[in-house]
Structures are given as structure tokens and as C-alpha cells.
Image (cartoon, rainbow, N blue to C red):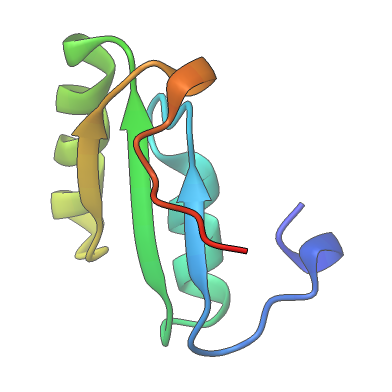
Length: 76
């Protein structure tokens, strides 16, 4: 999935349903010059993801949210 997204250095990568953090971890390992943001509705999932990110030294910001109502200020 990471290769299919044609990753570029400096990108902001958002995973709205981070779960255990696999997608963001894979993205970081592919090219570490990236800003990672992950969120999930469930605190247990966020705790698991945080544990995995720490173990692998993946820098990521996490938030608890509902993926159907992301609190991201988008401008057009």
C-alpha cells in the first residue's frame, strides 16, 4: 500500500483508523522524512499503536477521534 501511494519526502500522512499502527510504521520505514498523524475512536487501539511506535522509534502524533468527523482544518 505504501508503494502504491507514491510516497514523497516531506508529506503529511494521516491514518484515520490507526489500529496497531502498521500503515504509518511501514510508511515511515519506507522514507522517514515524513510527518505522521494517526487517530482512532478507541483508546485501547491508540495505546497499542503508541506502544508499537515507541518500540520501533516511529515519531507520530496520535489523537482520539471519530473517523467520520475528523478534526482537520482543511482549506481550499
